[in-house]
Image (cartoon, rainbow, N blue to C red; front, side, top):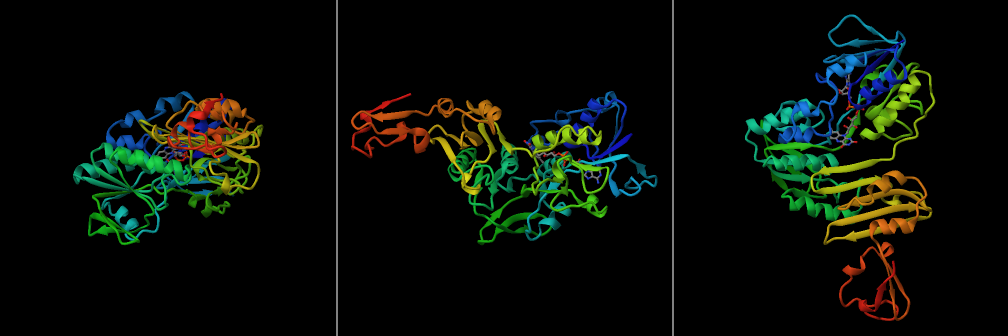
Length: 448
Ligand SMILES: Cc1cc2nc3c(=O)[nH]c(=O)nc-3n(C[C@H](O)[C@H](O)[C@H](O)COP(=O)(O)OP(=O)(O)OC[C@H]3O[C@@H](n4cnc5c(N)ncnc54)[C@H](O)[C@@H]3O)c2cc1C
């Protein structure tokens, strides 16, 4: 049997590895339009700042593929799929490639919001960039050097935008992050934690502008600035857009494979066409797309089993896990972090907010089940949270882990439970009074 995989990043590569793990005989051909074997996109911002080299990013060199008997075809763009004849066509070649089973691991491309001049200035290399590939990173690096750029604007205050801004700032460019929403990391944080993060980012010398809808990229032949809808203008030498992703669906759509935002798949990652599967950033399952590596890894196991007719596992979706990778800033957001947006139920929040020490720990429970967390500043609870996600937990153990305590008023017996109050007892003002008997802070004793 011959399996053809289009795409050679996390999803394509790990699917190939899993196929080979299950079956030593099957022929596996991988096609990618990129010129590099599998590399990690995580470190692309550091390729721009010079903290990492191209070699550092390559995860598997070509001899890895040879050892696993995987036929890797670099620099080969596929421009047509024919599910009826079971063939694909490589751009510029006349011979068609036959497959028994086809896996689409096509990934996604950066989203460019509807901003006047953005698409044109990007295509004409006039100082507007997105970051997805090694080639994008090298182009950005060259532009900064050749134009002697001093100021940068990053449009998008999500995880990738902030990581990119941090590395650009480390490259000695005066950096501004412009975010459409009224807070940073709108999908991963609540207001309180986002405010703390903003302060930390600004302490690093990065300007943060919130509630900022960019209307226009300005400049004649080369970028000079951006204009916001409220009229504010910011000067810049380079603009970097990190504003979400669009799954790559064109190839599938042209072949009449069902698509919506992504390529639609079932729990075995089968598409609407027989013997055609899809995996990774390009898929849509139960109206959701993921765009994160843990989802690609989980799906690559399912799709490999499915292609080999083992079907011993089905895909159940992946809990979103996100970590901000900025040295000195520990921040992880996982699962449900804002129950007010979920269906009603017995939701409970355990929270520790210590602004002075820049620490914010929020655990979201439904019944006794751990459903989500924001961990900022401290990561004592990290491995517990990762292991216990979606499981029943012991609340007292969680409180101990977060170092949250209860204090009892010696006069009236009122209990001040830090986990529920949101303010640590030590952070209450010195003149704070017991809400029941008006006793002072000194009248309270720590309970556990
Ligand atoms: C800067 C950056 C940092 C990131 N950091 C993190 C992180 O810290 N944690 C995390 O979980 N995720 C992170 N991500 C997201 C993560 O990289 C993606 O989820 C992952 O790369 C998706 O893998 P994929 O194989 O599905 O798709 P992709 O990585 O997009 O790979 C698809 C490949 O298919 C190729 N292809 C597409 N169409 C064709 C065609 N017609 N012919 C031939 N080849 C084709 C593409 O060129 C591409 O090489 C980051 C992404 C970026 C850009």
